[in-house]
Length: 81
Image (tube, rainbow, N blue to C red; front, side):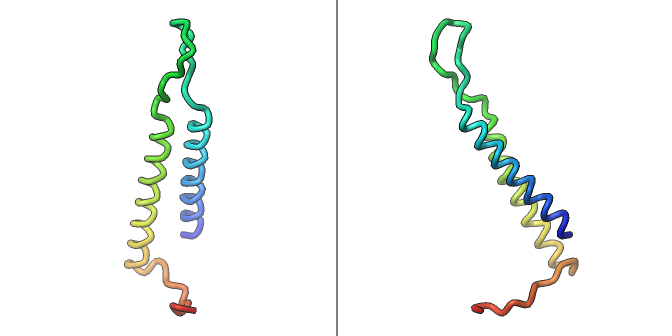
């Protein structure tokens, strides 16, 4: 279970890094018309961020289900400590 959570966390971080890459890359120059106006990004950053949010929600739900089924147990740390 720990390995699956670690892999899911790495996938979330990878998706966040790819969104940063797409954001920093910016729009594409239009060379066919002879203008230097950057075009709007093709939505790659939005797709990467949507994947990150969706995967985070699925991971959270899977952890809750595993806790309810008894596959994982709370650590026993007292609250307020």
